[in-house]
Image 1 (cartoon, rainbow, N blue to C red):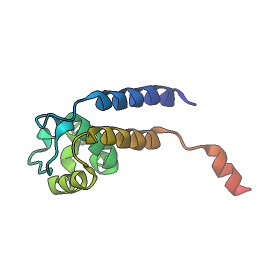
Image 2: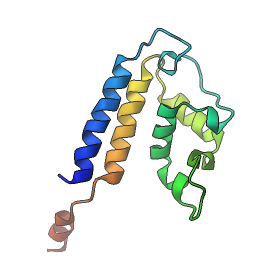
Image 3: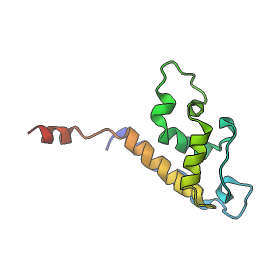
Amino acid sequence: MNILHDFLTPEAEHRNKFWERQPTNDPQTINGFKGTFAFTDHLLIPQGITEFLLEHFHKQCFKAAGRAKKNHISAIELDEINELMNEIWEGPGSMTKISYLTNELRLARLTPKDDDDEDDEEE
């Protein structure tokens, strides 16, 4: 394993455990939300969801060279964000699912591809 993976795995486990411990019976918190998403401003999207969206839409968020470092998520239309979130959201407790999805996407994006596989294909 590489150093990046050694950092990402414990960080991902920590994030999952955090959301697993959060209450699901308070509708005033994101983990207790049981409605339909209708974000009207990128800056109002909760941090845990923004992290997921930045991984899900990574190429779209970061493709423009010279783009400002803040608020990359604004590159994605709110309608597209709302549609995606409403597709995957299963009601209270769904932040655990979002956390796992974020981790999967991040690990897949940042884990180096195994060069040995390419060598095997050439033979």
